[in-house]
Structure formats: C-alpha cells, structure tokens
Amino acid sequence: MKKLITIIIVIIIIIFIANGWWNSQLAGVSSDESTKVFVIAKGAGVSEIAKNLKEANLIKSELVFKFYVKQNNLTNKLQAGSYKLSPAMSTQEILKALQSGSEDLWITLPEGWRVEEMAEEINSKFEIRNSNFLAAAKEGYMFPDTYLFPKEATVGYIIDTLRKTFDSRFADELRSKIRSQGLAEDQGVILASIVEREARSDKAREMVASILLKRFKIGMALNADATVQYALGFQKSENSWWKRHLSFDDLKIDSPYNTYTHAGLPPKPISNPGLSSLKAVANADSSIPYLYYYHDSKGISHFAKTLEEHNQNVANYP
Image (cartoon, rainbow, N blue to C red; front, side, top):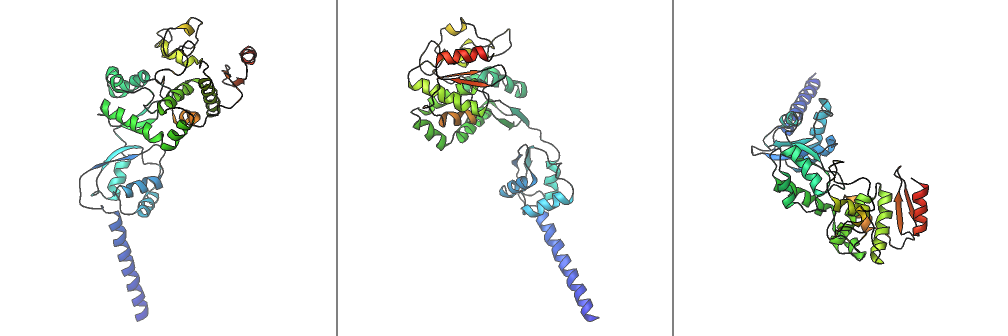
C-alpha cells in the first residue's frame, strides 16, 4: 500500500512539474514590452512560422508552439501579414494576434513592367504620387515580386526595398556569369530587361537570351520589338504602355531605344526583369546556330538560322 501511495505521489509530482514546464514554455520570453515587426509570408507553414518566431526571440520553444497550434486546431487560422509583437507576449497572445489579420498591404509588381506601370499600381495602393516614385526609381533595378508594405510606407521605403531585393537576387554568382559573357553588369541587366519582354517561358527566355547575345557579339542589330514599344511609350487607344501591333513606321521611330535603327544595346533597361530573365542572360549560349526567333499567336516559339527560314516560320505559324 505504501508503495502504491509512493507511486501516486511521484506521478502527481511529475505531472505538476510537467505542467509547470509547459506553462513556462508558453510564457513570454522576457519582460521586454517593446514591439518588433514580425512578417508571415504568403504560404508559410506552421514550422516556418515557429522557426522564425524562435529566431526573432518571440517564443521559447518551436516544438511547444507547433504542438499548441495543432492541439487547438489553429493550423489554418494563422494569416499572412506583418504584426507588431513583443517578447513579453505569451504564446497564446501571439497566436491571437496572428489570427487577427494584418493591417499592412500586399502589392504585386509583375515581371516586365516598366517603372511607370509600377508607379500606377503603387499609387492605387498607397496614394503615392506617380511623379514621386518615378523621380527616384531606377528602371531595371526595381525587382518585381509580391511585397508586404505598411500602409504608411513612404516612396523612399518602397524604392529602397525594391532595390535591396534586386541586389540580393542578383547575387554574386549571377554577376560573375554575366561578366563571363563579356558583358558589364549593367549591360546584363539591359539585355535581361529585353528578354523579359520578348519571351514568355523559361525555355524561351534561354533561347532568346542566347540569340540576342549572339547578335550583340557579332555586331548585328538586336531588332527587338520590345525596345520599340518602350520608345513609343503610352498608347492611349490601348490604355497600355506596350503597343500591341507595331507598324513599319513604328520600327523607324527615331530613338536610341530603337534596336532596329541603332546597333548595340539601348542606353538603359526597358523594363524590370525577374530572376528568370537575369539567369537566362547569365547562362546564355551565343554559340547556338540560331539568329532569329518568332513567337506565334499560340505562344509557341520558332527559331531559325537564316532570315529566309525566319520568314518561312512567320508565314507558316501565324
């Protein structure tokens, strides 16, 4: 009987200690009530959220956090966004905050947009004047992506974020490969900005980048429609910055961006390329046999070695 009582007492003590440990792990990390911004990216899972909270010193245990979330059926209730959290908050308080929804705004800036298009989208979300963004933005270096910005974000903050994102994505390895192509880094960005507008898929981008690089190296005009579209600017009748169908007269426009009438690269990028286009230029193979490319109405790409073959592709694949 004494042995049974002893076992029961031991079990009670273990339960008491375990409960105390559990509660201590759910308590705030410290008494520091100062807040820091914590961001949950779109699509982030519980494990990633727990890891990031731990690294930000906002929870004591990733394991306890994940177990608590699962135990209380909160897995699908945590919302992407940015939150102001403090180390003094308990796990329960943090989880309550992460279910409330963010007051910040998501904005998507697609690959291949020029800065004027970005300015319009930013203005629609944050009421930042187009002229203020355009005065500071650098074409080609405003990295296209989906961003989460505070409602009160300034034009300086947004531009700084876009440029820092570009610098981090255009990593040293890519820069080195660009230079190995015989291009300066800024030339690589210019070429990538053309590739972004001229091709629709990763495979097509690789081929287009290779063909354009080959033309550039042999001194042939790039003959890229996208550069003419850039030179023409906003088309009121189409409500677009990119004219859909170019005429023969369009191809004669007097502009340093017209790669039909001016040899070499344009003076600056014509759009803001994504990572895929930057990689396409970095990995381009100018030794390929093709000199021409054509995308038909279905988006299928056709390549040719000679102008005669190219014209035949245009005729055969409308």
